[in-house]
Image (cartoon, rainbow, N blue to C red; front, side, top):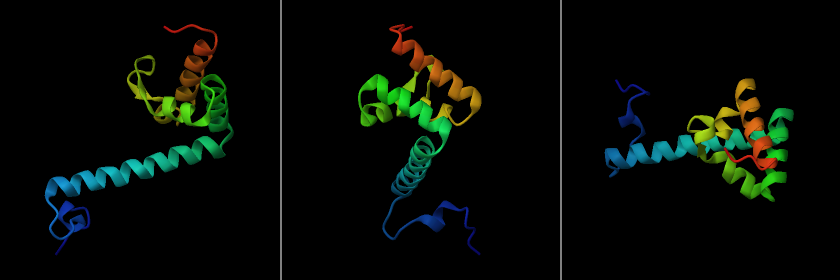
Amino acid sequence: MRHPESLSSYRRAGETLAQTQERLRTVVADAEDRYLRKWLHTTSDGRAVLRLATSLFGSRAAAMQWLSRPMIELGGINAQDLAKTAWGRKRVLEVLDRLNHGVFS
């Protein structure tokens, strides 16, 4: 009997274990990225974060790049992940506000 949670059930013919793991990591990362992008565009909190970041960095692409990068100011977490919670959104907005006022530390 095969267990669905078993990694072997996700392997493709001729694929090594490392290749399977990498492919699944990519699939999961892509799904998380799509979810966060949707959240940023469809919720009022997400739009506020995206609007301020876009205003600060000059384009939506630059804002999304900043939001996806791990930052020391946010404890090594990227702003997209941190912004999922109310506390995290507050921290992200604080960092963006500081950058907007020229405070870089």
